Image (cartoon, rainbow, N blue to C red):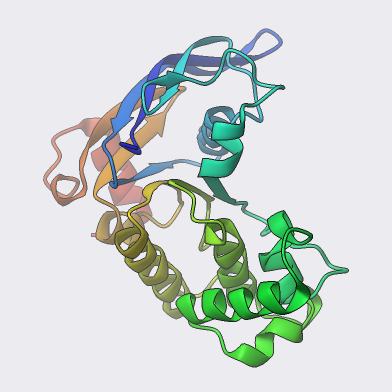
Length: 245
């Protein structure tokens, strides 16, 4: 598969309120893109729409040239198998151990021993020790929870990885570690990655493309290396307010 994503003239409305208007961008195969913008700019709403949790008012979403938003409720097997998602609040199951959380999607498809051993391999990929496997989410730090959520998202080798604020609430050292893990995994596994983040510096340093949302629209999109050189007034003002560069 190509592992490409195309968003075409996407608009999202809740009742009479327009959240996003005419959003269009492409993610080339095995590439990474990060959406940045002010709080309440519609970043999470956009992610949820692309993965099928919110129905668009209009527009089209394509995965490998397959139009996937015609039937949002009845998602096809293609979508389910190929999407890995890390939610902002991690969404780990409190009553399950770490290894059960990681292997949840196929918990009853293999033996307990097989699932446990596979979870150890995945924990290693996200730089966590074997003894973490038997812990429960309430015994983990915020950074550890993020890494477990990433391990679960990649457990069944998705072609597409979606991340909603993967470093929210973490200190700079932990944030850098999470970004490094995402970057390394995307290269190793050939995944196409879509993320949203309030950490602009981390986004620019770890993703190949940036999309900047403001006032319901895309005001800038392009290569990460060109963000600092932008002449776009909206993006320049956003960067200055963030005191990043």
